Amino acid sequence: MKNKILKIAIVGRTNAGKSTLINSIVGEKISIQNKKINTTIDTIIGIVNIKEIQLIFYDTPGSSFLKSSILESKKLKLNLWNGINEADIIIYLIDSKKININFLFDQLKKLNETRKKIFIIFNKIDIIEKKNILPFIDQISQTFKIESFFMISAKKNVGINYMLRNITKYSYSSKWLFDKNEITNKDDKFIINELLRETLLNFLHKEIPYNLDIKTSHYKILKNKNFKIKQKIYIPENRYKKIILGKKGEMIKRIRQETQKKISNLLKAKIHLYIEIIN
Image 1 (cartoon, one colour):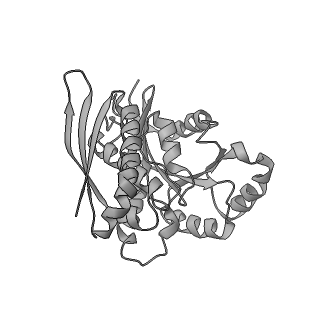
Image 2 (tube, rainbow, N blue to C red):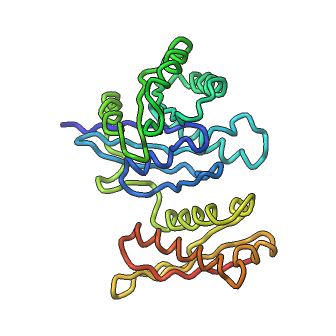
Image 3 (tube, rainbow, N blue to C red):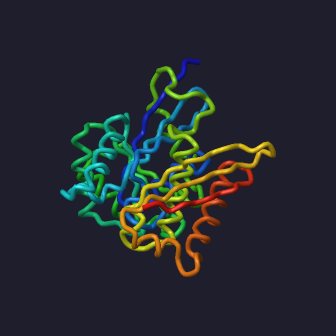
């Protein structure tokens, strides 16, 4: 059999569950998950191979900022549209509990301009009855040409295999773009940095996590197969240091322990993690 590929952009409003979906599809945590807005900044690629077909998923930043003219949104917009332009088809993911039909129609108008096939996925059907979604499908179908509708729960891994089987029909003959065992375009250091960023988003408030830069400065496999990792958090203002450290160093201790646990789950090994704050 000839190899085939299909490139898919996963688009949707912030917190629709895009990162959870791509992690479920790939079977590993490659994209961080958090309820704060714009958790995903870079375009992260997830890869899954089904027999002779390689599916390449672009996990794009939340599309809620598309109308924004704020300077900091420019990178997010660029990464979103890069993912869309690279893709063959578009999956628009919707949080079934928070359907805003006016916002959705505005987004679909923009996506229709790409002239790419659009698939709509209603996520979180484990917490809402399917019959409540049917009127929205009817409204959308009357206004836009949608290739297919799917109902899934990314968190519970419900309906994902059915969706994958259906979209593979749109694959086409081509050499695979990634090796058989690759699951993402990002290396371990990038994902480790993202895991620390996810923890910072969980524990810190307001604008602080978005103003921090993270770098893995040391990454070594020890003789006993454990890992020694050093990460640096670069802060733009000295006042952040006190907040990140917390009272008697309790906050940074929690951040280190939580991140260490996540990295251990990723690498399937014991982790010795050291975090340094640099102004």
